[in-house]
Image 1: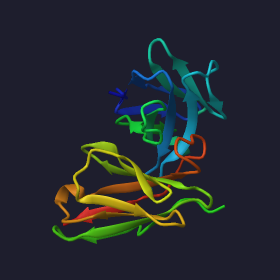
Image 2: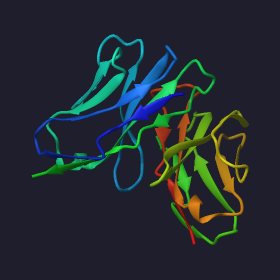
Image 3: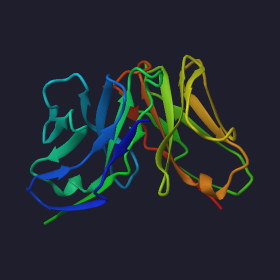
Length: 117
Length: 114
């Protein structure tokens, strides 16, 4: 069964520093996608970055990059040059493409990031 | 381009009542998925609709149901509300089943059952 594990309930980082949020996953599907979302206190889920299982390059989107290590089944999010506005919950999620559940996302438990001055 | 619109934003209901939540997808999006978010269970998939048909269902009791209209707007209904149904309900829309990069969430409806 598909599973996402985020082992860091909370993280602190100083403004302008980089931070890595950990995510490991488990799936028997060969075709899958990994997502990171940001959820501020308002509740909306904001898409940050996506990595497909067949993508050879690590995904990057501005200050966000995804460190994809397929053999280790990890998909860590790296935020460079943290800003106060980055303080939020961060969720790692996975979608399997070959199991007939194409649009279903499975989420991890999230990491609460606090950026300090 | 308007985003995914969920109404109402907040809702308070009494145990035993029923509730209907609405989700209007981004124009042109035909797939709508629903999720429940609680502190205890986290984010869990409820169901997905495409072309007015339920395509996928999560592991929730039959008290949770949904439907999709011809304009792709979707509603979910919870009957006989329980305290444990208090949650943030999120919907997401996409252009097609399995579409990845246009999968967009709304701001959610926060339901409190008292």
